[in-house]
Length: 289
Image (cartoon, rainbow, N blue to C red; front, top):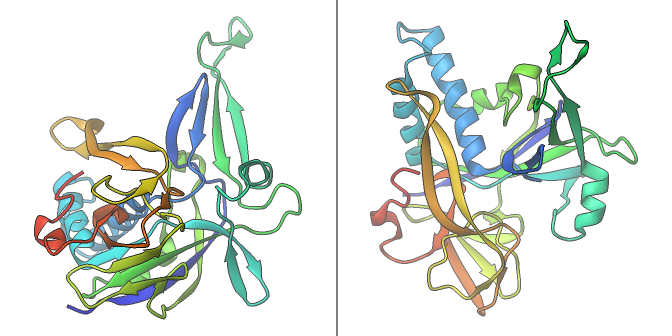
């Protein structure tokens, strides 16, 4: 099974919030677009496009589950990272290279509260602040882009869907809007790492001392970095939106370093990496989040 790789570049057209954690009344964003967020936006767009030409309702969660499974089976993708235009190309700005400078240039926040109009005051406990990745750098007002890779071995009309994707939270306020500015064949590499596209899933080789670029299962690889539980919410017809919790596992976070001479990782569902073994594909990791 051969996979065809594409480099995908979006221009960020509005603030982007990728939910991470809450500190006090601040909802903190991740400084990158996760594979799960990309999967969710692509699944949503494919289902709605299908509903526009068929009798299936776009509010039926079964349709989302069916298409979401197909996306994981027929596509493999990386996380997407902020980038700035450099000549005729785009240069990724890694959040871990200089965290303070990155935060000062790319991250801002929005505060809001509910009001009690008769009392002319704010509703108690309603003040909150949402952090976001800005569509323009905060110091020079340069446009911000998102760069990632998508690998395909079957046609799902996914290329057309890329032109109308909206990512992350606060979408009802217009956040997460993107514009597809480049879609091109990749030269067997992912952010400069070699990738083998001849197997049942793409396999990425990370040299010694280099960074992991996705959440990675802590198997028998020699890795140094922070770990975190990867938890999310799902939508099901029987219990409503966001009521089902999904737990993928304890993962090394993006930016962790490989300590061995080199390590090969299989690119799994939702862009999650796992140490490559002969059973990586048969195991179907993760079959569900």
